[in-house]
Image (cartoon, rainbow, N blue to C red; front, side):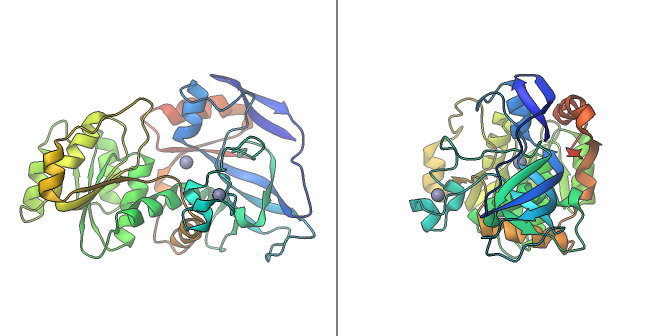
Length: 338
Ligand SMILES: [Zn+2]
Ligand SMILES: [Zn+2]
């Protein structure tokens, strides 16, 4: 089959590679769409290394072409699916205690990792989520990031009528905004980019705040009866994003560090504030199967609209151009389509 292969940093090549290994417990899927996420951008730049050559891509959708004879689930050729391409073993401590997003065996040598930039992929039944007719394959490529936002907001136990601040209006910020609204929250978004803030208010943010020009915590306080936000998600790796989020929290507020950092990032705060205010700070990593299932429903039922986030769709012949475009602040999400 054909695949877009990362042969070394900053070098993607379309190559003929071995077909995926089909077994009687796997489902063979023809990949149609795959998002170019931050992970792919970091791999491309060489900021993050797994191994070379590598077929990146973890936000993929496609059509089933073959179902192994021992697959138990209700799958059939022609069925459209979203795929969970970061595998979980189902056998480790974390998988068995409801936190398969923290599976100990995700990246063990021999595990299938990523692969969404290939023409085909063979997955286990538990990795394939059938799509409702209302959901396009392009929209389905957002299932994985939406599932990560669901995980993130569940971790914060966001509930009805709460004030939530999303720091950063990139693709992950805009998806968090919509999932938080679906959970009954009133959502503020902060970002220094005016265009992105405009998208955030179109998608239902009560206010888009530019923290480089405006007094973020002052505005939040005045909009929340002087209290601050009940919960905050930091989606940008800038240090100011984390400090700004912490300053906007109400007493007993919860903050999730959703973004990852390439380098060590000490918490920019006084431990006394945590003590006095009973603040809770957590992180969130990946998604469980339940989160993935709920993401299919939210997009399929129209409760999260991912279409405004599609900035560009590229084919194999312009994959490098696509990745470069994905790294530009001018785009939200770029999709590979085949
Ligand atoms: Zn992603
Ligand atoms: Zn596991």
